[in-house]
Image (cartoon, rainbow, N blue to C red; front, side, top):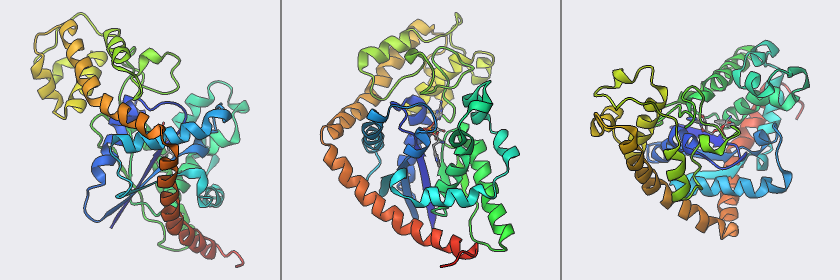
Amino acid sequence: MKRIFSGMQPTSQLHLGNYLGALKNWVSLQDEPDSECLYCVMDLHAVTAEYDSARLSDATREIAAAYIAAGIDPNKSSVFVQSAIPEHSQLMWLLATMAQMGKLERMTQFKDKAGKNQERAGLGLFAYPVLMAADILIYKASHVPVGEDQKQHLELARDLAATFNTRYGVDFFPQPQPVITGPAPRVMSLRDGSQKMSKSADSDMTRINLTDDADLIAKKIKKAKTDADPLPETLGELKGRPEALNLITLYAALAEISKQEALTLFIGKQFGQFKPAFADLAVEKLSPITMRMNELMDDPAQIDVILAKGTEKARSIAAPILSDVQKIMGFHR
Ligand code: TYM
């Protein structure tokens, strides 16, 4: 039996990287035989950076709506909010006693987010990967579908699972497997092929959000950075052309064809011809998701019912696992 767990932060709108790196894969995993899927909105992680408390609750609902609009079926998967399951934070504290500061200091996301002023970074940002390990281990999840940028965090989760088992002489936590098989595990910025597409990048022109309308999508694609050469015959020839490779990868992922097949459609063409075709495809694939998201957001009570059902299911798994961990660690009960 596979138990699949993943989540996204309600920091702002989801973008094409979130969709093609992770969410699209979550949808396919729902139909794997013998598997149970848990998809969570990671609000406790979202508050490790500056955020708007007046918008957090709506932003949380919007992410749940995006999951469902993209194809997560609440009858097949449990959708819920991290902060509604206190066991995540409770396990985090216990794992924090086993997490080494040195390993946390080496986390590239911490270094990126803390910037030059690490001394002033919050403890929550530093301990972020420990909470992430707790999110996964509190369900004894076997598989974690994510984009490539989460690989290092998952290694820490595997490490903490093994440390716990060794320290207490048990075979309790399984090793969670990263599943980095989304159609585009590392989507790059539209403006710089060396930077990943990110919610936190200053310019909105660097990303396509799931809530962008057709005109905005077309405008962003038109302005996307490219080069002056025509599209070549083979993928190998895209080496050294990161922006071109990114756009072909995105086209292929949206069209559900291979990168080579996508390239073959445009051999010898300039970006002036490729871009409108890409914009049409992006609008065709994303607009049904946007429309469904808007419909769902018009009925917030319906989302809350789905979340309440997901919370009940998630707690029924997490509570006995936390209780077992407490027993193993010798707490008085
Ligand atoms: P978050 O909210 O930054 O991103 C959500 C998911 O989207 C993927 N992703 C990308 N994939 C491809 N290209 C990109 N440019 C891109 N940007 C983001 C991420 O890899 C992720 O899968 N720490 C996590 C949230 C989290 C979590 C967890 C995930 C908290 N606890 C436990 C899995 C299991 C995060 O910040 O995701």
